[in-house]
Length: 204
Image (cartoon, rainbow, N blue to C red):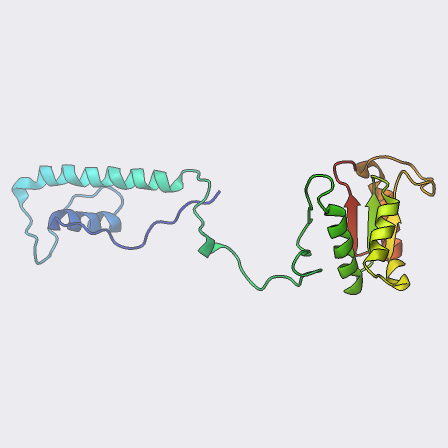
């Protein structure tokens, strides 16, 4: 749990005695009798010792409350200035795909999600990647037609592996992506796949 650090800037106290008392309390956090404190604008008055001691106790109480507040749990106090930074990672298919995590293309049916995915697959293959398409919606004709329509060569098409649990050539155990992920992982490792496209995640 992160606790806010105390501001090292000294408090500005207008009253010279209070300022002197605060300095003494900072140096001696345990209760100690207050004595004369030299200062150009301060003269110790023995007759006001009780009043001054009471003021000192108020200061101590305030400091204790401040300590409690600083030690209390917090949800954080960072600004964007405090966040780690550095050069962005090299894009897999600039400026759309990054190696930092999952990229999701979302939209209603017929809005072009599949065509965009095919375009990005083309960019990945031409950047040297080996891609696997997990087609849980069994749109084999759409994937084939669109990828060829984008002008991919035969060699590029052979570096895009298509798998679908609904396909006749999937004779292993069928199921959701959570149930068949080990089979997919084994196949990807054997084929040296570097990028996986899931169509679509909601069906998978």
